[in-house]
Length: 110
Image 1: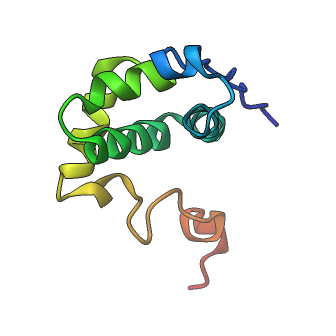
Image 2: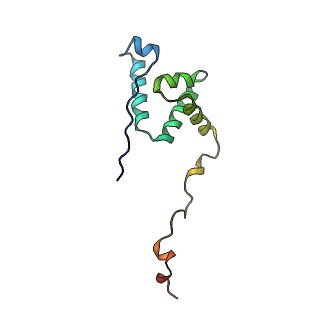
């Protein structure tokens, strides 16, 4: 089984975290980075996109400082959240490979 690569925790680059590393805000930023490190790529984009949307104007730059993720990645996450057809990537029922019994004629009874 293939092991997933663990992402290292990013240290927040905002002014408040540098001035007061044990403040409540710094604790929140560390918590956000711990959560972001556990997500896969798509979930990470959606999470940081949502954070940036909640912060409003300047949210992309702020989330970039907190997480260290690219501004482009955060913007793509926002776009994906706004899309109506989000479920497009989920496999439809009946998708995937056919079972051996269905695809191999030797198992068919005539």
